[in-house]
Length: 333
Image 1 (cartoon, one colour):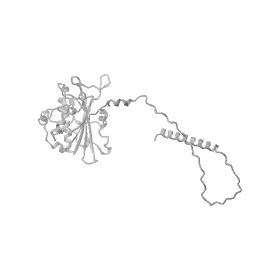
Image 2 (image 1 turned 135 degrees about the vertical axis):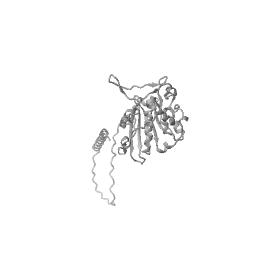
Image 3 (image 1 turned 90 degrees about the horizontal axis):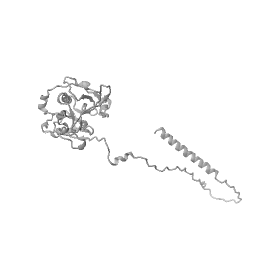
Image 4 (image 1 turned 30 degrees about the vertical axis):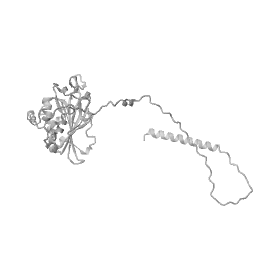
C-alpha cells in the first residue's frame, strides 16, 4: 500500500473519530439531571438480575456522497469502431510459426524447431513446392509475387525448405511469402546465408533439439554528415515490400534434459555480399543487441544459470559448398 493510500485512510479515520467524539460529548451535555425521590414504603421483592440501563444510539457521522462526474473525453471510445493495431498476424504452421509485420510486408520473426530425427526424414521435394502469397494476411498488407518480379532480389527463406523435408506439406509452408524477405542473391542468399543455414542443421549432431528464430532488421547507418539514418529500398510497383538492411538468427540449442542447459547464440548479418572465408563468429553479437534492434525478446523466461554461450560450447564455423553442388539437392531458391 502506498504512502498516499495510508495518508487517505489515516485522514478518514481521524475525521470519523473526531466526529464520533464530538457527538458523544454533545449527547452527554443534553442528558437531563437524575431526579432523586425518597419513599417510606418498604417492599420486599425477590432478588433478580439488575435491569439493564438503556444506552442511547451513538450517531454515525454522515459522509457526503459525491455525484458521479462524467469524463470530459473518452479515448477508448475509438475501440467501438475497431482496434488500430499493430496486428501480429501470428501464423502457426507445421514447420514454422511466424509473426508478420504489416508495415514492411515482411515477417517480424519466424521460429522453427529441428532435431536429428526431423532432418533424417526425406519425404518432400522442393520441386513440388511453389512460392505463394499468404492469403491469411489481408490483401492490402500482403507481400505479392509481382513485388519480387525483376526486383533484383531473391525471395529469401527465413525458415529454409531444407529444414522441412519430413513432409511435403511442411516444406510447402516454407514457400509462403510470409516466410520470405528480399535478399541479395549471389554472394548472400545463395552463398554465405545458405552456409549459415547448413551450420544450424549441423548443430543437431551435438544437440538433440535446436530452436531457431530468424528475421529482418532495419539498422541505421552513419552518413557522411555524421548523422545516423535508417535507409532501405522498397520493391514492387507500386512500392510494397521493404528490403531489410540486415538479418538475425537467434539459436537456442537444448541439451535434451528438462530444465537443462541451453546454448544461446545470436548473429546479425548484413543483407549484402559476404566473402565465404569470413568467420561466422565475426557476426556473433550479444542476444540483447538483437532484442534492442528488433524490439523483441527471445529468452526472457530462460534463467541465467541454464544459459551457455553457443560458440564457447561448440565450434562455430561454416563448411563452404559450391552453389551448384547444393542446388543438385535443393533446387534453385
